[in-house]
Length: 115
Image (cartoon, rainbow, N blue to C red; front, side, top):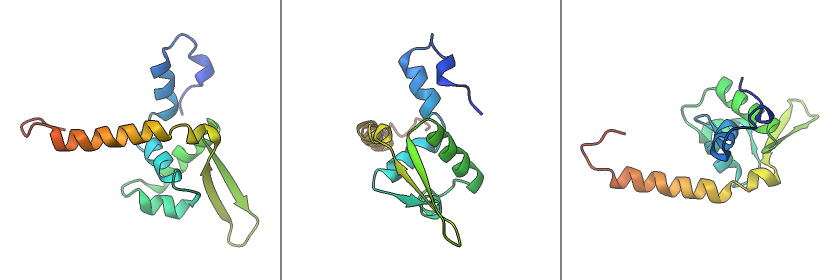
């Protein structure tokens, strides 16, 4: 598990953002949740390549950092939904910019360069 942001007082703001958002799947999860509330299985299907264990871990970290809220409904079988908090929604512009940059890089990268 990672350290606490409170323990990173001397770091620059980019390092704090990377501490919160670092990880292969976190921004992809946020991007999916920008479209609305999703259940675990929906997120897993929307993110091919993520393991159940990794998705669970990333969701727990995002919840601990206040970016998502996890709602458990008392049903059988249990129903769990994930949604962005107001803080999580504040990442919409950032995810849109990163998505656009990723598409640009994929298309504009000189053929000889490796990704």
